[in-house]
Every structure is written in C-alpha cells, then in structure tokens.
Image 1: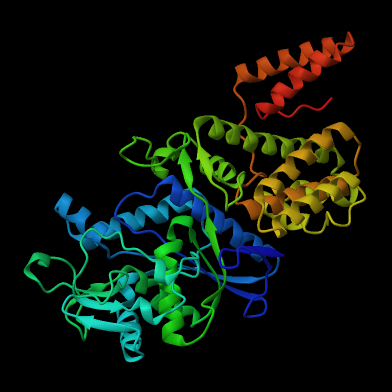
Image 2: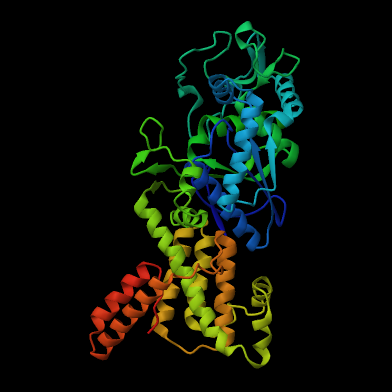
Length: 479
C-alpha cells in the first residue's frame, strides 16, 4: 500500500512506526463560523482514509484539534458583542453536527486548544531552555534562524523567506519569527481571554497548539499528519520546526498528506464573490451521501470544482448504485430456499453479518473478481477513490451485459462487496431507496412497455439509448 507524502513529493510504502497501529492527526477547524464545503472536502477525505486503513487491518487513532482561541474568534465575538468562549462553543457544536450529517464519524478524539494550555506553556518553556525561542515584551517567539531547515515541507529556503506582514513587531529578531505566546496585558486587549504564564498573561500562538496536543497524545513522532493544501506554509512548517527542535527527533511524522483546493464554478470560494457555501447551506438541497460521493469522485490531492451539475450527477450516481443493489436483492429473493432460507428471516444488520461468509475473493464469477481487484488496487494506490468508484460502475455495466443466472453464493458475494464498499466510502448503498410515487411507477411501466415493443421490432439501438438514459438517471434496467 502506497501513500503520497508531501515531504518527499512521491508515493511511499506505508510503514507504521507502531506495527499494526497508526497514529493520525488532522488539523481541525477554527470555530468562529459555520463550517464550509472546503472543510467538508478535507474531513470526508480523511474519514475515508481512516476507514480504509481500518479495513486493511490497522488500528487507527484519529486525533483532531479544535482551535477555540484565535484572533478570528475574538474579532467575531467583538463584532457580535458576545463572549468569545460561548461563540467558540456554539460553532464547535455546529461543526460536530455538520460532520455527523456527512457521516464523518471516525475521529477518536477532538482536542480543544484551551484544554491544553499547560502542555502549551510547558513546550514553549522547553523551546526557550533549548535556545530556539526568546522572550520580548510582546510575547515569546520561535527564532526561525536557529532551525536551518525551516520551510523544508514547503520546499522554501530559509535565506529566501520574505515577510508579507503589514505590521511587523519591532521587538522580534526577525520578521519571520513566529509567535508561540502572545502577551495580552496592554489596555487595548482588555476583555480578551487570557491565561497566566511565566511571560505574562496572554494566550498561545496558532502553531504551538497543534504540537503541544500531538506530543501529549502521540509523543514526539507519529505516522500521518493531514490537512488542507493551504496549511503547508507556514503552519505545518512551523509545527515541524517546533517539535523537532524541542524533541531533537526527526522526522516529526512519517507521511504528510494534503487535500487539494475546492473551487466553486471555477473560482476560489469567498464571501466577497458571493460563492461561499456552508455545509448547512449544502444540506438544504443535497444529502450528505451525495456530497460524499461528489468529493470522493476526485482524488483527495487534486483540486475539485463544486457545481450544481456535478452535485446532480453525484446524486444520480448514488441512486444508481443503490438501485443496482436492489436488483441483486431481487435476484437473491427467489433463491432463499434450502440452506439459505434462514436469511429471509434476518434483520438487515444480521444479514450484513452473514454476508461475511460469502467471500468475493473466492467467487467463480470472473467479472466480480476482476473489478474487486481493480477497486482495492486503486485504494491501495494512495487512496485513489475516483478509480475505485469507476471500478464499481464498470462492474455494474458488465454485470448487466453478462446477464448470467448466478448462483446464490455469487449474488451474496456481490452484496458482501457492496457492503464493504459502503463501509469504506461511508455511503450506505445497501440502504433502501425511497419507493417511487404511483405516477413515477406508472411512467416507468410505460417506458418499459415501449422498450419491449422496440426490442420486438428489433430496434435495438433506440431501445438501448432509452436504457442508457434511464441508467444516467439512476434507474437500473436489465434486459
């Protein structure tokens, strides 16, 4: 199994530092507003990555931080004349709710920055003691020049770094030095949340929160660190510098994984352009599983363009797979006799357990063997969900062409595979679609009659064209 690492710029064999256990950390949100679809893209991707690693037999501990103290939170609270702690708690709760709607449920622990102030202060003090940080009247800063390889993740040379800060703190040794602790004792900061520290009352900088949290739960080194592409510099490079400096151990992590940007109709998402879409906005029109399939239809490292057309297509594709599973159920039903009669009396959850007995790797059905191999080889190749999903649709298409009267064991093996696909992709394809209305059913019956007449008259091209259009709408047709 291979993973692309941003540090090496190539795919590497997955080798955990902890045998069959994997420690995964992904940068969480700054909770000052509702989560947007860009957040959704990143967290769906890493949720799927964790799901697949567990499917492969790894025990994965997925840790995510919650940045609940930050300039953005404080400024938003001032704008609304509310307490910043209450504001952060409100949007943290909404974030967790939004993730649940997207079936992102694999995070083992959410670690708030404000719950780890002691660990942050301790790590800062050790950086000072080792000579990598210094104290001024405005706070504590990491001295970038002391870490000669700073910027190695972004592939930036420390001597070529340029500051673009509008207001440069004159107390710093270099404009590139970043804050570990911000003193907030001056009158202009009155009312802002602060904590006592050896360097004055204040609050932590952004970068130090993550390394203090990961050091507590994972130690100085762990397997995978993920986040959006925009976090590589300076955030992730700052994390590397801090942790490797304080621990003396390299590398901080084995694999750096980053999701690509999400654009809306070809443009960067922003409130000024009027194309800013929150997850809550999205879910008013589309289901969470539709958005999941939309996200997973693009490789996690590639840019993704959000559009109504793409969402509609994802919606149809979810329905198409679910309808296919219903076709399999219809083929299984009359075969539930003899040794398999007991399956008819089981609940859906019990049936899913029983499916494990029917190994799709052992089936004699060649089409199933071919496309299950394609699916898992794609997932093993840096979690290539687009190719894996393509294998699923190729299988459905070929199954309809084969038109074989398969044994019940092969049909149950197919359903077992789709149960595993559901678990890996986080979309329950075995769940029943809502039945069509009476008018819809009547219309489908009319279309079926027309196709039958066309086939009887040997007008196969037109009959097949109608069938293909129905398939595009998520309606599976078998002749």
